[in-house]
Image 1 (cartoon, rainbow, N blue to C red):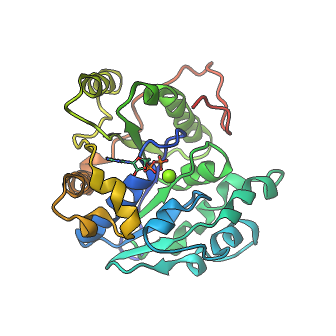
Image 2: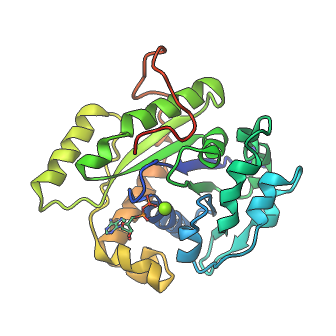
Length: 280
Ligand SMILES: Nc1ncnc2c1ncn2[C@@H]1O[C@H](COP(=O)(O)OP(=O)(O)O)[C@@H](O)[C@H]1O
Ligand SMILES: [Mg+2]
């Protein structure tokens, strides 16, 4: 708690590419902003998809500098977007070099955490993570209170989920005791297929307390929105996609969704690779 406001920090994480991280980060951020919350979206993926979606092309290297230059304030990397209450720290390809440059640096996974106190003026800080569990994602996990895991409703998408839970558990034990899994969010759900329904029921069976009530349905408007450089709530405000992300924002924006550390608890003897050795 700083300056009278509690900042809620959420990493949107899944080491599998194409699981809906960027779509969720951008549109959940916009839906929370629409609720009147001040939202900062940090694009931590060197591919910069969230930055491009919100109209920020390669903006040089401010975020990279935050990682590699000692004492560089993170506020220097913040940019306004066109949308009220929604700010962004954009990414650029150079961010991909962070892993190598800081490979032998001590406590490199804590860099983002040291910047936390600068971010008190936002209600939410959302992080769009890259599709790897490397140093950038580890910085996100060390920094945030919550992890939100988008899962594509496809059988392949379930592979790697248990390993991801173990990684979160390990970070909680070693680096960030306050870390919890806020929700597993089923994405791209097509209720017309039996397959999607089977995946949903498997998710509920395996992680009963973690699956969000909101399901993000397959919706072509969501796939189109980045081309129109707008979040779904502005590009197609009446669409199912907008409806689903609004519903998710309401579900997230209540204290009861901050579950205590729980869910999957791996055995202590389980071997755990923290950095980049997870099956995808
Ligand atoms: N609910 C959805 N309906 C339709 N297309 C979607 C939906 N969610 C994501 N997509 C599409 O799936 C692809 C992968 O989504 P993305 O959010 O970029 O995943 P990630 O960031 O995990 O790699 C993108 O082309 C995106 O437009
Ligand atoms: Mg992405």
